[in-house]
Image 1: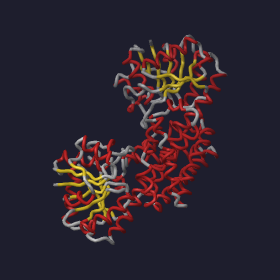
Image 2 (image 1 turned 60 degrees about the vertical axis):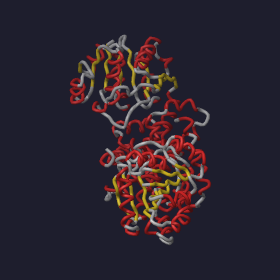
Image 3 (image 1 turned 45 degrees about the vertical axis):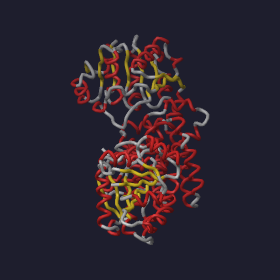
Image 4 (image 1 turned 180 degrees about the vertical axis):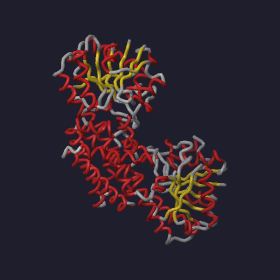
Length: 279
Length: 279
């Protein structure tokens, strides 16, 4: 199986590593706007070959678009018209706009829209690691609009990574990821800014930062190049969730002002309910 | 060295484990309101002996108060008047109110106010683990009001845990911990509530929760019994930081409303500055 990965970063590079290890891919072609990234991937033997988009597409059985979501929206109108028997899939964090776009493109049925729920706060080929996907969920959207053989191939690929598969429509996906991923990033970016602005001249004090702080601001290290287009494409859902989050924080705030510590205790007891979901 | 630990939970229990391992303590006495906790600690050989407060105090060279901060405020007026040559210390997350209190108590100079910046989202003796403190910072407050031998003993104890020592006054401590610890907890509790309220009837969807989400809501599992008195005692500082945090989130919100994604990108670039502090 020859697999072409467009965008050899954290996700594309980590997929390449695991697809080789599992035996799913015997030849991996890398396509990337950055020659430096391709060279690094070649030297690390993460990819077997680097080439231009059209050549990578022509040689592939499976094409994985693993770029930021705005770049994927630009590439798919170039890729899909040239598809013969290949299967094309993406791995982006937003889905509805992409689904709207591919719905109007030729060879829609050779395309499978997916989102593996895995990542780290790092980005680029330097951040690619083995087993990033193992045991996690991936989402496949609108599988009914793709050929059965295309979906089967993509499912087999994800299973070879050790992933579990969930099916959602694009709107469901975008609402849920706003809740279980996108708001976490905004919260973390905002927390980092809150503290950086205050403690500008007192960096020594960060020596005191607890592991709890490190855990809540970890995502603030994430790439603005990746996240700006996600927030752009999922803006309405993210805005809804952000409004709710600010309103919950404001509830804490007004209880602190009123010194109603019994109610604050009760809010925390309710928040502990997260243990049932994330033990 | 006989060490009496009052409050055999996550912190007290973890200290007991490491003080035995390092050889600092050859006999550890546990005092706790919960007989169940004491029995578990005895069975795990975390403590050598369980007894009542007065007996534990009389037998000790060093007394470590490792209860929630409200309980510490109740216990110290009972403990300090009975002190002869013992050294008494606390490990609480808030300092100024405690310092105000002990300033009016007898034997103030035998007391050392401290805060080891270490913990997990779990609590109780079941959560006690080895090496919780290794490589982290501990704060000592108002060391000048304690006898030199008392401070030296406490420093030696923390060094035996592998901790680095910082000195701050109570007000500095309370402001900085509001930034580098307390706000992280409120943010995490609020994030958990935001998502739990929305996804009440759709628990299956949490299977999709990313590791990023898990990391930002981890602290929402923390004990309300521990955190309510912290928020009560550090209410003014926490309120200041919470106001700033809500204002940063509101900046994201208004940029999303205006679809000013260039400015959102810039905010994230600034937030990435946290890498310099927490690599």
